[in-house]
Length: 490
Image (tube, rainbow, N blue to C red; front, side):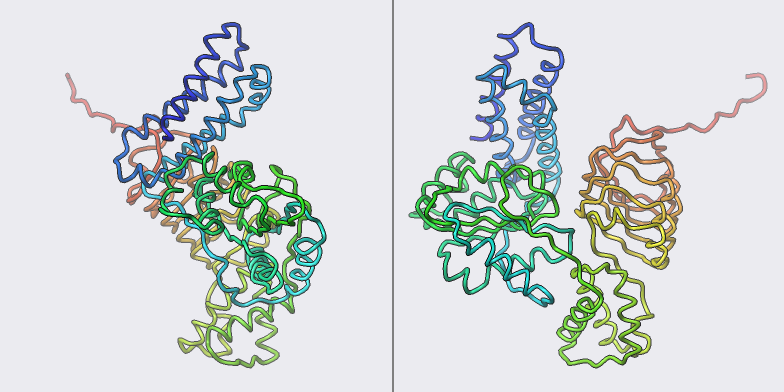
């Protein structure tokens, strides 16, 4: 069905080109680019095995819906080209195509998760009461949309879970749904999951899986109309086409339904009544969270001396008040304690694996990274990072560097100093510029890239120990033949 929708959209757009021979050159270029992306997608699907095509059905439905939207806009020629002035839809199609092609070589779509248990929580009592009293249980009778915003690891999901599972919320909203979103979650998957959680299906529950996005929107809308519901979309990403989800949610006045997002980003594609900005923990709350996590992991009530507390708080400064980092550190230290490390050595024994991201990393000074000289693993996947510090190149012991799915445009030249690096993952960064110093990393065995701009062509014989190499065009390779020796008189 999705392929037929895409093909129908192509025909509509080609008709626009035929019927408008005096079209502006720029508009013609955008329109032909859109058609090309759609045809490339059809060709890609034709070459895929049937098992893979089944796995791709959710993402394909999203691509098909976007094709429908674009084709529908051709009915108003003037509005259509105003809509594409900035090439946003062409760029979106390209990103959707890239996601599908990457998925086709083994990436799986992340399924939605339940609200789950809340784990260790510190310092969120006021936040919970503020959200529930000010936004969720207020007197507004329409659909109210709110957002919990903050950097990765600051506790957005934990706060949303506390709200979702609160007895007052469970008592008021009979229809509740929790959807966890990842980089590979499609709009169709969200719609299907909403229907499964909110709608009592008569008959075959697989019916929703076989429907296109617009049919799913209609089904969800009809079943929710006249009802009061509460929905959480956890980890909403900029690439998620939010309007396609909102089209399935009625905003009836008199029912007081609520929609809550958590996101690292400013939501610009929907009206948000209230945004709750998450703050990092101060020193005392950081230490309290560390202790609670440490005790939970060791199944004991541990007592720290004043000197150990001082050392521990000094160590936790590197976590920047981020709960996810503090919890990770507490687990590491608990494991070390259980393995027999003495109390006096506990905070001096090992380097920390950094977890955190977003704007916090962009603002981190050069001196910040100097505290991690013996760090071996640095994973910043999907953290919203835009810039990288030159100082990271001084982490001489680094073995693994994960930068996947960020907004990085340039790899610093200082990365040439990472002589021990074995794994470098810079995949899913749009058009990142890579200096030739990477080819000097003699121990590099696994290199993951896509949409890369090379300062110089790659020498075939540069990476002697490479075992995994992804997404490098044949046109970016070069090979220097050894100079042939000649004999006298030849």
